[in-house]
Length: 633
Image (tube, rainbow, N blue to C red):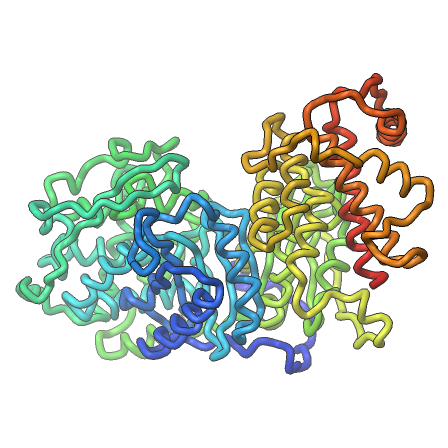
């Protein structure tokens, strides 16, 4: 059928390379998870982090499949805990989530982790990596709710083995038909898990009871969360002693329950009802979704409630096209199962879900006035150890300025390696790369025209040319400096400041603070205090370098590195002077301010009263000179 066809490409299979990460390996046992956790804990120990590394998600919930990765969270110790104490807690106020993750990302390659990908411009920042054993790892900070969610799902799996059996088959089906992924307008894997449990509550008789309702008289387990911009406590209690609960009287087989799952949701009243395992089998089970904590904008929107975070609708990103596609595939699958006899259901199910992916996609929001198709393709092809791939770029006549561009690869390894470019820049545009399904590309092609570019990798470079090619491991300090030069939004600069602090780049952190002030009009949150003495000598130093003299503290006279370093140091001192309180400046200061302002196309009255513009200009110049000095050295 046309709706099932994949975008075609003539790209060849890439050659193997010793630098490439191994193919992702499934997490198939608790021992494998423990080994991954132990390696990440070793990284935390080297970094001096005293918190705990905890696994969550399918690895501990019982829903692990062959394609599951390993979800981990670093739980910082409570602020009032002693240095020797450990335990779940909220992150400290002295280090941001991004800062902690940047430190992990910098240290993990030294412990054998490959393909480090930083995803910091997100509601939940994380680091993606491939463990030395080949297991894909997603690491975040402070996800205590996720840990409790996984414990709840694991309790349901212990209560009845059919919970995990049906749940794994549903996840297998959803992944085979590429219906997993909220960024594509579908549902995420956890949403399909909740759909499974809610259905098993509504069989006759029920396969499982409501474990949250069973604990209604138990002591609350409050977890504080700041996901929605303000701290909110959520009650995460549930009945954990499942061995005390009698087994269900429902004796249906796994495949019979699977058939019931698709029938239940094919007939579900999505416009009125809510999927809530918190309310299942209670007097409020039939409550309208419009009366729940999180209000909806329209009746067509689905509502799948998080069992603990009552503001979180896991179907919030599910688009009309995504909803239509999920229901269409559910009804198609129901027809297939209806036509089968009970004896042949397992074989028929296996063949129905036997759809191995042939292409692997990344998508990226692109401003077509700032990034061209050739620039986008050139940026991606510069990554090492990547085979031929295809770029689909929105045609120039598209009316929308910001729209998705796509890259289609023939292996998941190629996609992971290119994904390392996430949150780097093409000119002033930051790349926000997301893995996506072929449905996302098909939906985009229906909305407008796309150029198709066949991209071949760069040939193996010579020793001289290799310096111009994307390195196997990108230096995060270089990423930060490049980002500070071109970042255009407050969110981008905030993240770059936090990364600078984690990397010990105090100068770059200060420059980021100044740039943030330019964008917001607010003083940087962690700006360094300035005094009149800080600016002493700044003007003469700048005047001396401008006159061609070298700085004796920065290197031998005539040295390119020394000259660049001296000018950088003088510019830094000038920035410090301009950051302080307005004061009378000597003649060279006024002259320097006027020259720099003229270069920026601005008139500056004398004496100089507002240093923001020139400070930013000189700060960016200083970053350029740092890179120049490093190249000379």
